[in-house]
Length: 332
Ligand code: TYM
Image 1 (spheres, rainbow, N blue to C red):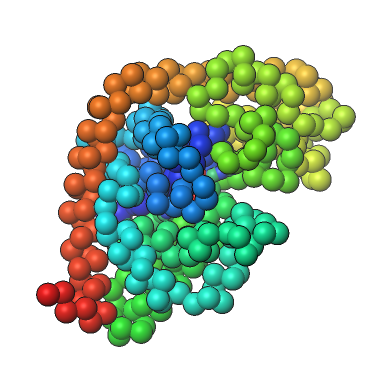
Image 2: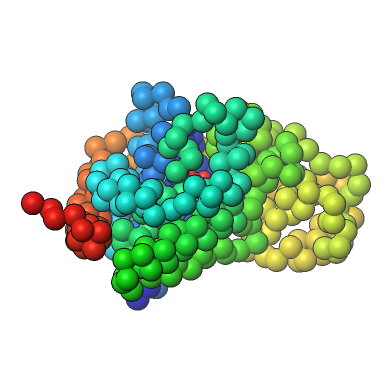
């Protein structure tokens, strides 16, 4: 059985982008794989997190994953900071990865922006930690949204260089699983930018804890163009906002985009947005209710995470110990 690893940062509330690009696929993969899912709090502090909000966001992210259907009895759900192997292996990978490789990472460029000198060094070496997350478990498949593809290519480069430098055949090749019609959900305010939990504008995204009125309002206000919806896919060329809303509809209705256009083509956005809002509310409100139920008993969420951390460490610790021996640490 293939071992799956994936993670999500608790740097805000999970969005519809996280759900469609990742979490929904994580849930589906549980039927036929051994899955290890992680709330990556070490990654989140590469950008400033207010400690009090951060603790709450971390617990809430775990609750959202449980509410979406991650099953911690058959699989593993845990916090990254609870398993030391991640940071230990990341340090070794800091010494394997090359500065030139990291300089090519587009996400660093986007996140650091113009003020690069002031970005944390953690943000710069972030992809090395991500490689460590996956390879500490020797996971071979990683379900992610499109935006993580470059990081997974780098993880493979690190694994290969490690194997080569130390003359071993130790780390496996990692396969990205970028699944579904909504592997890249865009901002509701700008169809060329991805929907993100850390975007300063709350109007740019649907949060998994938004109530029905908020969802309807955000969709009604979503940026669109003046043309009606086309009846065929070619009609969406150069219309990123229209394409995005159609993609979201298709993903949530389990349809392909062509069928959505067949049903809604020719209509103005007013009617389509109403239909989309109803669909989003229908799919997300049970998740929000279930999340609230988990959060009403935070100790139960913590217990799941603690148990997950123990089981995760039992897999990762021996793998990282072996890596340390290969490197030549004498471990006395
Ligand atoms: P993060 O927290 O930004 O996002 C979590 C997952 O959601 C996907 N995603 C999206 N998919 C479609 N459309 C969007 N607008 C959208 N926004 C986010 C992401 O691709 C991701 O799959 N670096 C990772 C977390 C991470 C990780 C790992 C992932 C750390 N270690 C090891 C896989 C394996 C990140 O910041 O995800």
